[in-house]
Length: 100
View 1 (tube, rainbow, N blue to C red):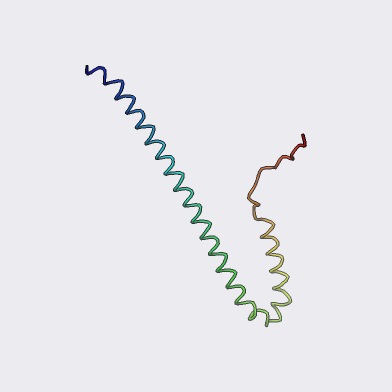
View 2: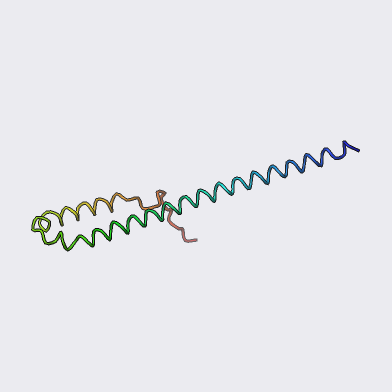
């Protein structure tokens, strides 16, 4: 009678291992998604802080003649270079849809 239980125990142990593996994979995926969400939040907060600082300092900087002559064109060029160098988020080429 003891040998009848052995296959059942092996199947149960295998199912338990598969369940634990699935749980571990799901936990790792959730942790990675949480880390990405935190990074996006930190990035948004940093951008908001920098923008606020720039807008706050702008009236003071605009009083300077040098800033109006050199800083504005230089700032525009740097902003354009930054915006053109940012990745768009999608690196693969989209295929055109075919009309059937």
